[in-house]
Amino acid sequence: MPTIGYGRTAGVKLGQTITAAQAETFLRADMAAAAAQVDKLVKVPLSDRQRGALASFVFNLGAGALQSSTLLRLLNQGDYEGAAGQFGRWVYATVNGEKVQLPGLKRRRAAEADLFETT
Image (cartoon, rainbow, N blue to C red; front, side, top):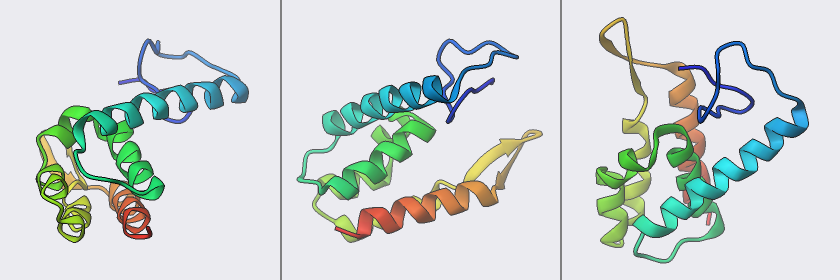
């Protein structure tokens, strides 16, 4: 799947280029859309940092991943600590037909968990 800028996939064609300003505009729009999905799914109060961590998660994995996750179930039960512990489960991708742990996803999920826990 081709991406552009900071990970935008919607409407991207292979070989397409954009300016740095366009990349920033797309990122702001994509993160706003991800945050709106978080707001629809989460039923408990969130700090700005928690909302940001979850928006990053949704931006990277999609709202469906959050919607079906133990992370969301625990969070909506008010178990913030348990929810924070779930970020580390989302570090796998399918490569050549096999699920493998990716170092970049491990770093990203750790950063999201840290942000989530820093209220």
